[in-house]
Each structure stands twice: as C-alpha cells, then as structure tokens.
Image 1 (cartoon, one colour):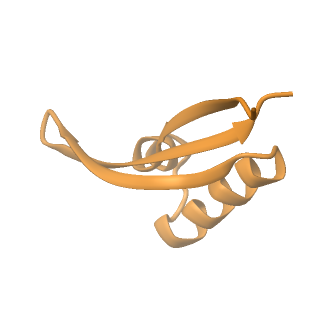
Image 2 (tube, rainbow, N blue to C red):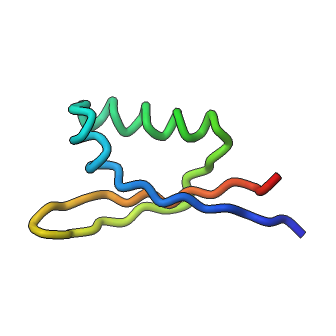
Length: 63
C-alpha cells in the first residue's frame, strides 16, 4: 500500500515575503515543489488578522 506525506503552503504569505508578483510567483512556487515530487491536491482561501491567503495542500509518495 502506498504511503503519502503532505505539505501545506501559505502561497500569498510566501510571495509577499519574497516580494514576487502573484501570477508568476504562484507558477514558480508550484513548479519548484513539483520538481521535488510534490503534487497539488487542493487549495482553499484562509483569512487571518485581516489578511487573505491561499493555502495549497500538496502530497507526494513516501520513499
């Protein structure tokens, strides 16, 4: 049976910290994690202290 590991990424928070534009930044961020074997499973919006974020849920098979 396959076993999985999971990663949760606050996309907008990471892009704001790195001062990257949204469209290009999201693609680069997902490409980076994809090259490490992570697969995007889902996204959701999250609000905390008047800031909106997009949370990405990723998974990859454990080796």
